[in-house]
Amino acid sequence: MSRSLRPYRSLVTEQRKHHRVPLSFAVTCIPREGEAFEGSVKDISLGGMFVECDRQVTFASSVTLVLSGVSTRELRLPAVVRWSDRHGFGVQFGLLGAYATHAILELVKKSTS
Image (cartoon, rainbow, N blue to C red; front, side, top):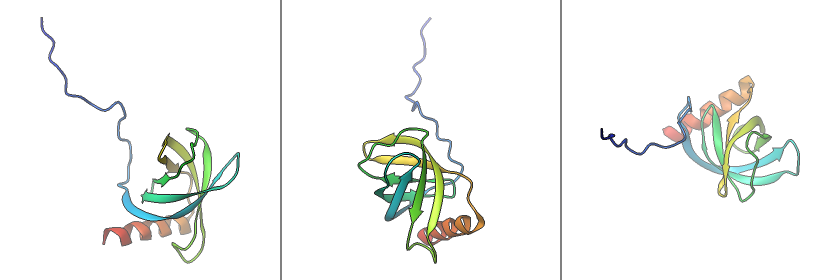
């Protein structure tokens, strides 16, 4: 009996609940352990973002992302690293307050209009 060939499927299943939009601005990354470093946000959604940097960040590590100049006040976003490669890392945001949630929604809205 011959087996039918299945089309190639990625081993990683897309699990994002929110569509990410492309953006570009600086971010300061503060790992729970270690020294702060700079990166560049390349996309964002209400659920998370991709940070481009040359630093390897450990999967599942906690990080605080500090965004300045994108809102009327500094945003400090708690996050968990969900994937990492040599170009940067993707995070899922932790519990966000009302101000941070509103500021992210405004960023997303501005970049899609």
